Length: 438
Image (cartoon, rainbow, N blue to C red; front, side):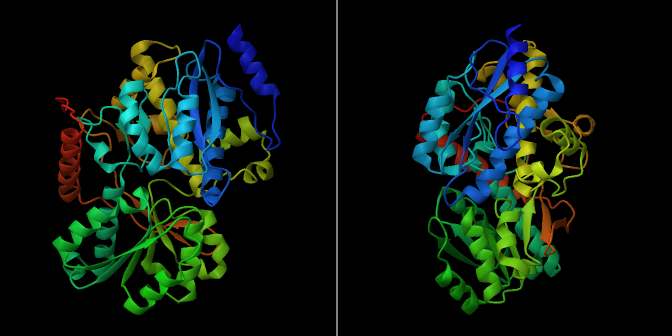
C-alpha cells in the first residue's frame, strides 16, 4: 500500500524540466540510489547530462516497470561541484538514506572515488566507478568493494596506442613517433600516464606529458608547446570546460583534428559544439553508441517525457554523456536485479548488491530485452576481474554529430593486467589487506 502511494506521488509531481520528480527514500519497498552530481561550476557541461541520464533511467524503470521486480527506485541528488571535499560530504549525507541504506555509490569523480575506497568496506557500500577511478581496483582480490567495468583508464590508454598503431600501419611504425598527452592535472588526468609511459618504452615512441591545471580554461602555453613539438598524435584526458578549450586551441593552431583523440570523458557534444567548424574531425574513445534511436530511448521518451522530444532534448536526451549514464544506471539496476535472484525481490543492502555486481553477467540476450542491443557490449564480472578488460570504439565528430569510425579496439592486456596486479599488491601491502583467494 505504501509503495503504491509512493508510486502515485512520483507520477504526480513534475518538476520544471518536465521530468517526474522524486523524494528521498524513507519507506519500505524502496531501493535507494544516492546521486553525486555537479550541475554547477566549470564542470557543469559534463555534469548536467550525466545527472539527467541517471534521473531519466531510474524514473523510466519506475514508470514502465513499477521498479526493479516491484521494488521502487528512489534517489536523491547532492551537488559536489566536482569537488572532492564536497563529494565526500555528500556521500556521508546520503549513505544511510532509505530502508537499507545506499545500494551502491557512483562517485563520478576519480578524486572522490579515491577518497571513498577506504570507506566502502567499512560502510559495506560498493563503489561502481564505471570507466574511471583507481585502475588497480580492477583486481577484485584486493578491492572487494570496488568495480570499474567495463574498462579502465589503463586499458583505454593502451587501446588508444593500439588504434594509433593501426592507423600508422603496425606497432613497428610506432618507433620514433611523437605522442603528446594533454591531461587534467588531477588524479583523474594522471591515471593514463603509467600505461602511456610503459608502452613508450615497449614500442619506442616519444611521449610528451602536458598537465593543465584546474579548471582548464587557460591552455595557450600548452598548445604553443604542441605547435612547436609537432606531435604525430595528441591524446586528451580532460573534463568539463577544459575539453572545449582544448578543442578550440587545437583548431586555432590548425592541428590535424583526425589525429587528436580524447578519452571517453573528452568526447561529448559540449566538448565540440563550442568550437564550431574547427572541431570537425576530432575523435574520442567510447564504449557505447552515440546514437539515440534504440529501444531504451523510445521507452524514456514515452515513460518519462510523454513523447515530447523537444522537452527531452532540453534535458540532454541522446547526448554522449547522457547515453553513457544510461549505461551506468542500467548496470546499477541490473546488479540489483542479479542480487535479487539470490536474496529475493526486496530492498537489498549494499553488501547484497556487492554480490550482484561481482556476479554480474550482462548477455546479448539481456541487452536485447533492455532495448540496448548494439548500444553497448555484454559484460561478465568475476571475483578477480572487476574491470572485464573491455575494448573501446573510436567516434568522430563530423560537424553535426558523432559517428563510430572503428571496430572494437582491444586493450593491450598483456601489459595492462600485470600492471594492475602489481599496483593492487602494493596497495594491499600499504593498507594491510590480505588479498582474497578467487
